[in-house]
Amino acid sequence: MNFSEYETIFKDSGMRARIAWDVLAALDCEIIETYTRSTDVLSSLYTVWYISPDGLNGDWRNAQDDPLRVGDAIKTVGSWPDDRKQRIAAFQNTFMQQREPIQLALPAYAPNDRDTILLDGTHRAAAACLARVSIRLLVFAVRGPCNAAVLPDLQHYSG
Image 1: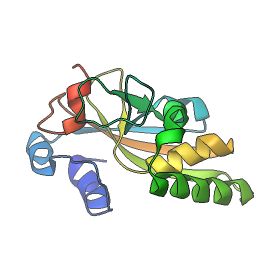
Image 2 (image 1 turned 120 degrees about the vertical axis):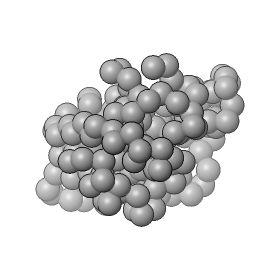
Image 3 (image 1 turned 120 degrees about the horizontal axis):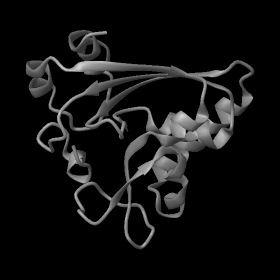
Image 4 (image 1 turned 180 degrees about the vertical axis):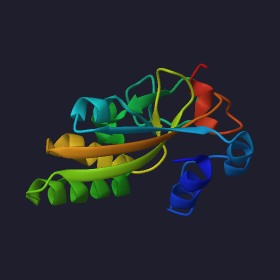
């Protein structure tokens, strides 16, 4: 997949992450494709959700808050907004009732060789981890610069 195809699939998908599509299109970034059945891989992906120093739901705008991995997102469940709680619970219930493996095709961003940040599908990813179901994971990650002008969340990462 090239960046143009990635943009065609994910740009108008309802993604709420504030990614600078025009900047990335000009860079013609590489897309890293990961296919796995591993819930460990899913759990290790970063989200655009944060934890504050006091353990509550955080925000990307707060420099002291840290990004959460999918597997750690539950740490802030007590302070989640109601809509997040409800969406995750609904997905979790649906996933637990399915006999077939859950298939997740997720857009992501890779600002370095260590970190991959989900740009969309975090509710589904967290629900799949919580449900402890069999998964088929397809992650399509843009390999781009670690620059907050591209994605504001990148202020929390290093290149």
